[in-house]
Image 1 (tube, one colour):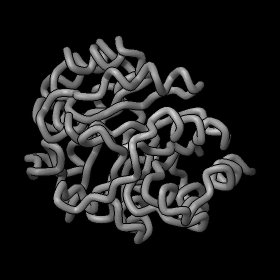
Image 2 (spheres, helix red, strand yellow; image 1 turned 135 degrees about the horizontal axis):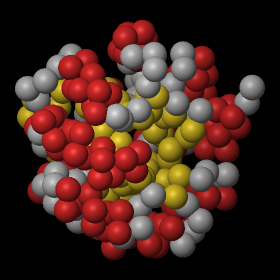
Image 3 (cartoon, rainbow, N blue to C red; image 1 turned 180 degrees about the vertical axis):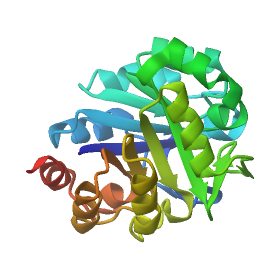
Length: 239
């Protein structure tokens, strides 16, 4: 299982929101390269960038930081504001190894095959779930498709790797939504899921790994020190 340490960007700082609410944020400074270097030193291959300003405004706002993060030896997985094919292409052109997008697949499911044909596995559909519904537009609105229907449509278009976030758990350190991931793994055993939202302990990582999750995003737990990244990577890679 892969570990993706996260960096949420808003107003020139590294922050964490609680359940995606912009009015409930904690600031963790603005040392982007130093933070990325600490992730690399702990053994991470990836950094998971959440462009919160992009998610709020609908267009990416932090593409300029991608090369700085890459210079620390990390592969960048970038999302936030990627609501057009041109936005996706610009993030990849800026150096992101992969990007993830939620609103575009959810709002234009008729274009999923075209998206997969153009970007392939460099684009990860983001299935953001709040109270059993999809959340779109920076989690500020409910989507029209159920999470299961959206995932099915993406799967039929060719996608096999998905970022699945439990919005109600994000930034809470309350543990992953085990019931939700267990159910989705049961319905879609042939695809790979990256879990996000609430992961706060090595026990959470062991549970996700044991239930077949392909990866997990760690955010608040790293910045608050409840999980040591080096230990998380060791746990995720152990047999």
